Image 1 (cartoon, one colour):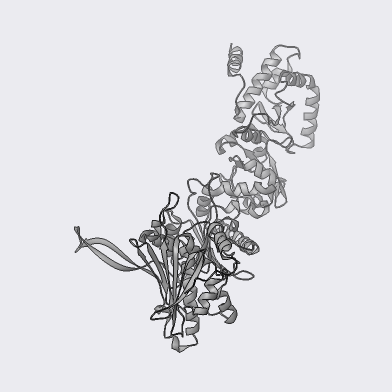
Image 2 (cartoon, rainbow, N blue to C red):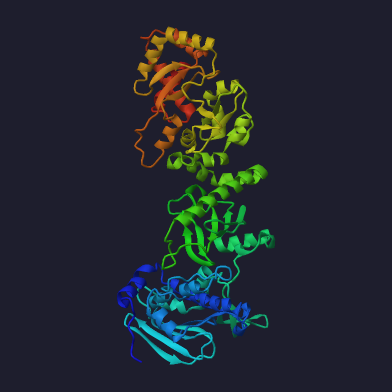
Amino acid sequence: MAKKQFKAESRRILDLMIDSIYTHKEIFLRELISNASDAIDKLYFLSLTDDKVGKNREDFEIRISADKDKRILTISDNGIGMTKEELDENLGTIAKSGTLAFKKEHDTSDAVDIIGQFGVGFYSSFMVADDVQVLSRAYGSDEAWLWESQGREGYTLTKAEKADCGTVITLKIKQNTDDEQYDTYLDYYKISSLVKQYSDYIRYPIRMEHTHTRPKNGDPKDTETVTEDETLNSMIPLWKKAKSELKDEDYNEFYKSKFHDFEDPLLTIHFSGEGVVSYDALLYIPKNPPYDFYAKEYQRGLQLYSSGVMIMEKCADLLPDYFGFVSGLVDSSDLSLNISRELLQHDRQLKTIAVTLKKRIKTELKKLMDNDREKYEQFYKSFKLAIKYGLYSEYGMNKDFLSDLVLYHSAAQNKLVSLKEYVDAMKEDQKYIYYVSAETVERAMKLPQTERVRDQGYDILCMTDDVDEFAIRMLASYMEKTFKSVSDADLNLVSDEEKQAQERAQEENKDMLAALKAALSGKVKDVRLSDRLKSSPVCLTSDGPLSIEMEKVLASMPVSDGSVKAERVLEINPAHPVFNVLSTLGTDDARVAKYANLLYDQALLIEGLPIEDPVAFSNAICELMV
């Protein structure tokens, strides 16, 4: 029979599909298996109303065979098959979908889910094969037909023999090149791996004969070669089962095998969503972050399935960055796929699912916090930075959504508390949520800035992560209570009488304070008498939006040149004996400059900041001792 040309500009379109549409050549196997599943679905659908079909669901199967010597790979099914006209129409016209026509002709929505829509998946075969044959016999027909093509030059269609209805696709695998090892597509283990990866949940068994050696009669020294019929797919997705059918062990084993973790997950979230887009979700929160979780190369995202066929290994659009630690998958039959079944035509559906997922994840985490605090704190220890960066990122767009999930160490209760728990425990006269930033909780509690707040009986939240103060400044308030750092310029903790007394003392000692400021020219914005200190002689605070702790964080960054500085203020305790000594000195006394630098260095050390001249600091102490 004369060779027929492809319709629809065959050469150009086939070139485009082979070279551009599919990201990975291995996708061809997923596409051919999906097409075989579609063909079985169609016949199964007919069997529901036609007793002549003579098959039950368990009679259907997809078979794969490989002949390495002849470089032949075969994928066959016992589905509905195709007539001569259907072969000519569906395979001769690129992007002509027999499945789509079947769905339009039959209302299959309630009976069976058929995912093939575009009719181009078949042509992915030419990425790995020089010659493709399709032998098919349609259900109800006495004739079989053979469609054959080497790709761009067209195809032939000849009468053939086949005992039963169904389709056999035979691929002549290409020779290896420097860039591609096509031999791998003839290897049992590679084929099995691809089936597991992309087609594990096809609802019909995918079978393949496997020849291998094994110990004979239990003796490892005596082996025999056997050929066994292996089922490569598990068929029934775990997430499609009712939760009542599943045990924790089922979820845990699936998680460890599917997402390559050695530990059981900390939390499992299994639910179905219905509405504009229907889907099943199976999500896991691990006990510990992956080793590269905070590296920029880390790829977050959920596996995305369409009717049990994996479409994407990592769909980042389903998870916000702050929930990037979540593993799992989403399966929906409502997704609008593009012709390669790799990307989505419309991201509106993904966005709808993503909104529901993030709300559900938050709900489950909040439930864990309320009902199993120890387990939540275990989660929080592993992933608190992701939540905190979520508070701060995107200009605080997610701060209200995430604020219920953060915990901080309470100075008064000596344990982690939520913001709500802190506010609920506040004293009636307390106006602010007070916090202190330092490298550790122990260091935070020794800072002299905390003295006045603690003396009032107010609790303080200890913040020890670099992002904390940035996040809290972005959050600004919680339950109508404003956050206030113990180092803020005005704590509003003194009475009117105390405030007036301090103002008088400031005025009376203005010349001395000015002399101290002059001695520290360029180091501090101001020198003031403090209303926050009780027993300590000095401390550093800051004016303006940039705190000293934020300055330290910015200075530690690799790209920092050290030019970003907080507006430092040296505060002196007017009730401390040190100030009594200062007040007896004249402003032109040489000791003023020495004392100013000594007190400033002392304040730097208290803050955990480096002093500029350790030798001068040591010499100044020695002079005082002498």
